[in-house]
Image (cartoon, rainbow, N blue to C red; front, side, top):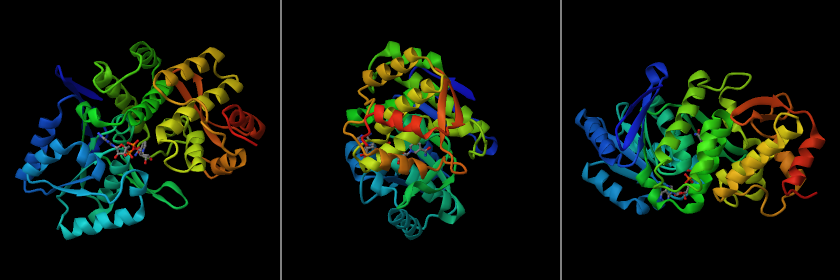
Length: 372
Ligand SMILES: NC(=O)c1ccc[n+]([C@@H]2O[C@H](COP(=O)([O-])OP(=O)(O)OC[C@H]3O[C@@H](n4cnc5c(N)ncnc54)[C@H](O)[C@@H]3O)[C@@H](O)[C@H]2O)c1
């Protein structure tokens, strides 16, 4: 990892050999982005932006500037998770072909995790792979989905079941773009921030507790985003394609085994991804406590920090236990029929582990608000 910094922003370099790339983080990144796109065009490379209608409207000034640079922009037909589906992907591929994009073209994903995953997968597969740039516009995308090269779409059988590893050539995480992000979405991103601190850095956790409720103009936000990217980049560098049997990239799934089940059983859209992760993180912490790995006071600290950031710590309405258990058993992380969780062994220290204790898991769910 390498840094360069000035008073407004810093650049973190993710070191992955020939797939290394910079992440520019901080306020006022727009000029840098526009200059980079102009440089690509000067090399006769076509630049093609993918976004959605809501982001285009919210960030109209950015898109006006992109158009002035002669950059074409494509909008998905819908907002949110439904855009990450095969019909939307095939439409995007056809559009690339109709627009005569070639192997030197560059796709620019301007959006949250949905646009990044969809446009990234389209870029990974069109002409067997073209370059792409991530311009994350949600906090979740800045700290998580734009870093690490996972791209993909959902299938009717489940989330993110078709995808590819495809690293961007650059990421521009401009905190000014968060000005228009709804508060609930900002809070959902905080769940991933807190998750990252829990699995990798107790000093970051202390900092979050001291900072109180964060917002897009908070002076500490760029440094917090940078630290999250750094932790994720380190994990990705050591396990780029999630092949390690223990630990590695799978640690980033802290809270996700429970969280995905909540999202799916409640119906997508009912809980935001980050809200499912927040509750899932509490349940994973309680599981760790029940296994004798984590102290009671640590679980209380986690819940307090999530609540301070407007995040739920238990189910809003009871969800049926059987459906939650069934959904968990189909999780991608199930290995040889055994449920696999990320557990906390201390604040800032996580591990992957098989847990063969169905009654304990049931109790954790029931305490978290599930119903029989
Ligand atoms: N690839 C990865 O490593 C990875 C990691 C974590 C999550 N994900 C994926 O990310 C997705 C969730 O991403 P998300 O939480 O960013 O959701 P999202 O992309 O759906 O964005 C959330 C909402 O905010 C709106 N929005 C985005 N930026 C805005 C802005 N600046 N101003 C106004 N509105 C804005 C969007 O239109 C949308 O309605 C999921 O599909 C998840 O699977 C991927």
